[in-house]
Image 1 (cartoon, rainbow, N blue to C red):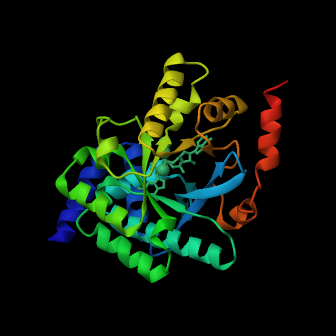
Image 2 (cartoon, rainbow, N blue to C red):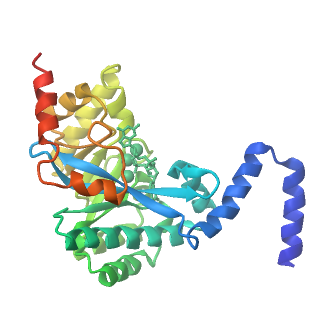
Length: 291
Ligand code: C2E
Ligand code: MG
Ligand code: MG
Ligand code: MG
């Protein structure tokens, strides 16, 4: 019957689908095979402490090396993975791969403090804690070197089990970061209710702060809030000297953005991990403001 159903589905689609729908169906079919075919990989983007010029963390960002279509960015396939129930499998692969990669770097002598992995709200089910625990044990990465980037959609649940899971992670020593802060619909109060370590200032606020007084005010408000709640801050999507000055002058001192590096392969990342690698560039940026 599954076969007949599949056939009907196909007939239905073939009559009604536009080109985008067809492309999407093809992607969906390929995505189901992508894991087995080793087509998924991470690029890593440095998070730079602007006081020392040293990379203090990297964010693991998923890529799909499609055999025909080349590199596919996450916004094109993560939502599909979520819809077709593949995100759990994809997510646990990602966690294992990120932990494995950091262990490998550390064994080579790189002193990278942490790796951050994005977690979809749909991964956050009953098994998730056990899964993370197993992956840490299996790879041998200390929990404090793994950071989970959560979005407001997870916080919004505000269920007893969510809080319990986050507290369990905290108890294990994992780091919890709130990603894309301010872009969702949730209330501010969860910031104090949930056991978070870090707040990421979203790129959308950083990007237009010099063109929009509102965005500048928002960035300042987010920084003030983060500080009063004793959260570490990471500013995301920093591309220009102006953005660098505005953020660092106002207390956001860890920066992730194209200004320092795009997300890169593990091979390209290695040289960037030398202590103080970005210090000279930061000195030049600082000198630039006094011209
Ligand atoms: P995100 O977690 O907010 O990641 C930051 C995004 O901003 C990344 O896009 C990064 O490449 C981009 N970015 C960083 N600095 C700059 C900059 O200076 N300029 C510009 N224009 N962009 C910058 P990317 O890699 O395309 O990822 C997009 C989103 O896909 C991520 O947003 C995250 O929500 C999701 N994602 C990526 N990897 C994973 C994953 O493994 N699991 C899940 N569930 N989601 C993922
Ligand atoms: Mg993120
Ligand atoms: Mg983000
Ligand atoms: Mg973002």
